[in-house]
Image (cartoon, rainbow, N blue to C red; front, side, top):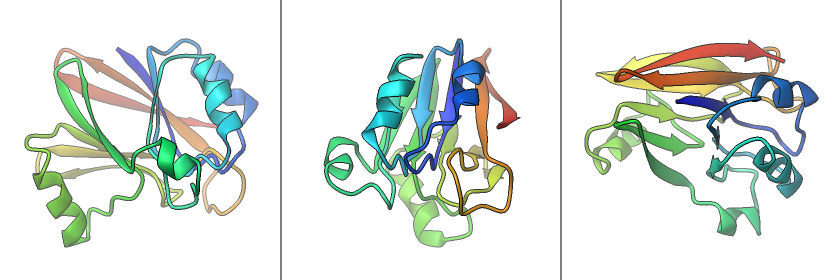
Length: 155
C-alpha cells in the first residue's frame, strides 16, 4: 500500500502535492490543516485519514480527532499532530495503544524519521507556507511485507 503523509498545510495546498500524491491509496494529514478547502482538494486524490492540530479551531477541531489509531496492512500506526519523542508524557501516550509500528506526526515543521524502541516516528515536515527552516515537504510511504519505507519529497 502506498500512502501520502502530509502535515502543517496551514490553509495552503501546494499544487506539487497533487502530482506527488497521484496515485496513492490513502492520504494521512497529521494536523494543522488550516482550512477545509485543503481537505476538499486532497479528497479528490485518495481516501483520507485526518487529525486536527493546534491551529485547527472550530469547526475543524470538532470534525477531526486529535489522534487516531490506523491499522494498515497489519501495521498499527498512531496518527497525531504533536508528538515529541523526548517528552516522557508523549511516550506514555503510546502505552494506551498497545503494540504500535509507527507514529505519523507533524507540528515541528521539520521532517524526521526516528525510533523509540521499535516504533518508527515519522514526521513529513511542513507542507504549507511560512514558519519553517526547511523547504516544504511531504512523504510517500510504502507499507509492504511487514515493513514501512519512506521517501521524502521536497516541494
